[in-house]
Image 1 (tube, rainbow, N blue to C red):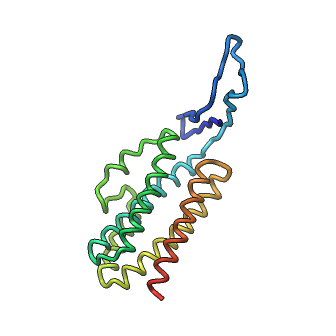
Image 2 (cartoon, one colour; image 1 turned 90 degrees about the vertical axis):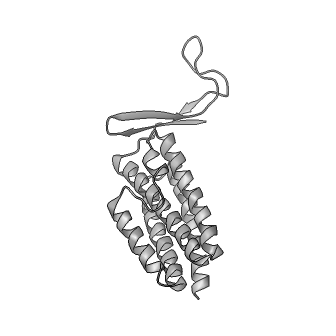
Image 3 (cartoon, rainbow, N blue to C red; image 1 turned 60 degrees about the vertical axis):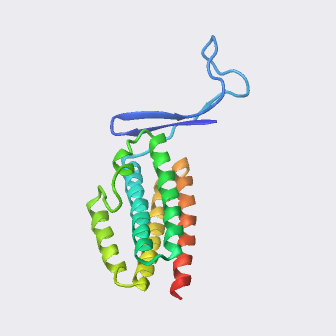
Length: 184
């Protein structure tokens, strides 16, 4: 198993799992020995992860609001998927030692990032005009997510975080297709 380390400012953390490590001489023993791979995440990658967590929360919160407004199953289904995306990124952040309470315990529609707060408010107002507008907002969210996720993958290339982002990118592509099918 691999073990990784990240640095954010002056904070360092190690994480991972593995087999037996150590021994009387301090060396590695047996085939189950832990292989340590150092992974350093830049401040930019960590900041981007925090942004991505809130962006996934925004998508889920918008879709839940639209489901409440219109009762369309697509909003409920994709909100559930966005919750899984959010949870996956929270797990990555927690593994990296990042405190995620500010995101986990925020009420629906409440965001730390002022730009995301303004975007949420605008999207809710636009989607409240009609079901077609709500579906178009959904397509816009997924398009934005895909651009942001692709950039995040590039920044975290070769890490478990990039793998998590790749899974989110595939999910967002599916969500976009679903919205576009209803808009066609």
